[in-house]
Image 1 (cartoon, rainbow, N blue to C red):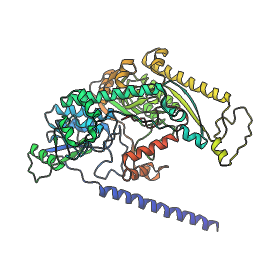
Image 2: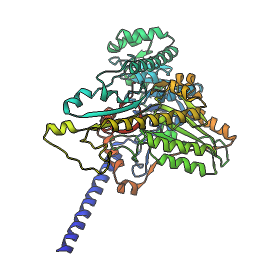
Image 3: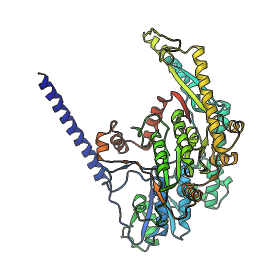
Length: 585
């Protein structure tokens, strides 16, 4: 009977494995079938910018790579594609379709700057949308000609940030959140301790929201030959909800037209007949074109990506298309330090922070690498709290004008479920051998002594944080504290305060790293995370499979809501992080 049972278990396992493979290959087949074939690069081609997100780096999946289009294109690849299109005579212009764009303003600003550079070639840039979102229009405003569907709309409403508060709901449930923090502006804990924004937090949100809006107004006004006041009038008049002709009347678009009419105009520009197809080339296809080399030297500037929440766990979130940052980043930095071919490192940071402990582990490795070769930080949409922690020791720091950075502060948050347990008739009893043995138990309230210990630990963490920043930025601790206290700054303001060295993007950071390393002839090594066939099949979490399923069944907005819900349940322990869902644009 024993061997029969074993045989039964093995047989069931084999059947289950076969079924899993069948489902997996069915998914892959459906993805492959549903994905259109990419166009070849031929004469009179047009680069089409059509995207829903711009991650800093894309996780390469060899198993799914046979599909004719990448699931996503990274910001680096998108900029590279635009640069190659500028230099390639087969590309006659760019066609921008901004519908569904889901990236942050700083990332869109990088893409916009790349298109500005493309325009120096004299090639055309045309934008069209059935309806423009605010971020979509910010990108489209770079175009020579902007078209809008006659029944469409153009959203230009200004910036708004909404915070959800859970305190009253938790009290009704009988859940007590014990909160410990340092920093007047550390708003990450406010949803769990208040019913509305504190005045300091409201002031900081107003400041960076006004800064973002001012940047958008000035950029759009400059591109369209109008004044920032006229952009403000459009927003205040509610024209975003009016007929499309208001956008034309206010000079925000050049013409109202149907998609077919716009494509006919493109045909005329590139010398095609009305019945001929336009050869649209995707960003992913263009990015694979051979780039001009920096030279034949074996010297490298290595770009390492730090994108996502800083977490104690490893890998990507199963309900997010993003990776998280964990201690494997420290290993990447250590490996780069030991590689003689790598002469300098650029750390591209796009993170709201997270685990204070992991942040310190990564900070330490940045310090060690700095002893051997230059390291330059390039900040993306977010490099705040823990994201700034891992950046502050670098030799040089670049930020985008609309990067959200700073948020130098620490908090701790621990739930107690005694109240909800009592409501349903659950009781507990504790036996312990030392005074603090039961500290942190979910059904035991903390004593005043325990609370004092945790607050002291949080204050010690904050002192360590500002000490790290003071050392890295060559500032006094008091100066760091005055710009710290958990306060968030835009990149432009961070430059004035000495938290960053220069405004610029990834390419400027690469050039600076090479200059610090004193190398003129060098290659660029972009770190890319790869998953091969066996990794996908035998990974413990099956994250890649779940992500593939979600990508093809759930919208980006729904994924973001799921991510925020998951993050809410993980906001315990000691953290250096921005508030949940901290995306005010």
